Length: 513
Image (cartoon, rainbow, N blue to C red; front, top):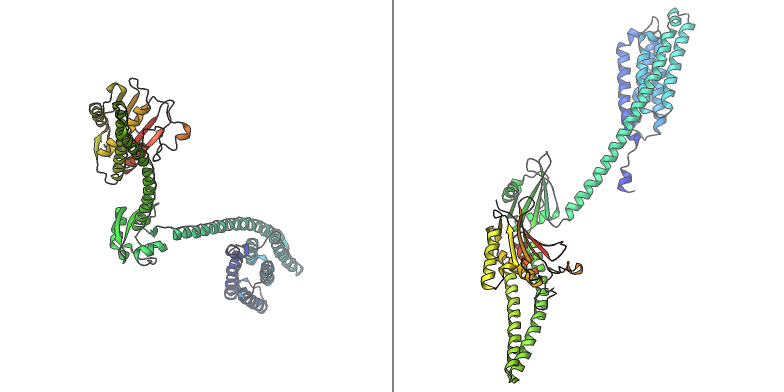
């Protein structure tokens, strides 16, 4: 049997518990009738009353005892309990002089219990049985020439109506209670399943996870947390006892510490949950992260060096072939052509090596607060002075107050690559390249470089940032790739935006107030 089936809820489970409480009530009533039952007696019936009460007490004890025995069908057990109560109380009612002693009102409790415990038409059967019992008692009293019994027949009729009213109300309440209990059980089962799923997810995480209560005591921990801390903490252990360094890191919210007997270097991140004050603590294994990052770098380096080897081989072959021809050629014009080939390919190799060296410097960023518009204006002035840029080709506009936190050399390299790419494909008309400095969402600052060239074909948009992808035979295909890598090294993003004409690149960086 599955776990879900073994915990399937059945209405009878709660009703058996209710029947047990009712059995204790019957036992108390029987004892009470022994102690105070004399007030119900009529003259000459003391012995009979004591005998009936003694039998009722014995029946109460027996019925309570057999509730712990192997259970029979619930309906038959309830029928037996209710029938015993109605017969005993109606007999005592006869011996006590009719309905005036108040016993019919105790019988209403029996009918109400039957309405709460019984099912379907059985509820009205209990009310009918109680009504018949009261009417029979009252009829017997009338046959015994009891004048009060004849005159009180109307009052007994109202008592019988009360039996059916009580049974109806009790049944409605019982139906609603059972429906609510079934819903609560379903939600509880769903919650237990969700808890098992959450526990399995937490157990299989690559990062360590600790769940702390509002007082900083461990409520839950996964296996990885035990590996990082040297031992799996038990529930209820204070975080300060587990590791003072970890407790300080949890208080700060985000820190890198060395914890545990094995001295694991972990990064601690915390997440506060709701108003109860519970906290989830994530322990990231810094050694594992560094290993994974190293593997990614090695894989990228392998692809990069393979591409570099391929790209360098072609210009080297051209240089080698040109130098051989240069040694054989006597004409000055041909010598100039071969010299130009050697010079162009040498510059191409030099540019490629410089790009690769700049890429290797991405992890040594030294960010500072830079006024972006002023920086871009100074950069353009340098391009005009040293690179022969025509100042009429580029227009610069934006907000002078916007500042970014960026490595100055990285930002210069990104601008150099974006501007060089724009100049390569622009039309060459005045203002064909536009550089804009704009305020973005929240505290972001955007730098846009837009040209009026043919733009990036749709099929190439997903490849523009891949290394060695270029549509220009004179390019290395590393410019945009390196620009994006340098942007990421400064917690910035470089995107190719949608545009109707030309290429539109946008650098999004964090602003500085």
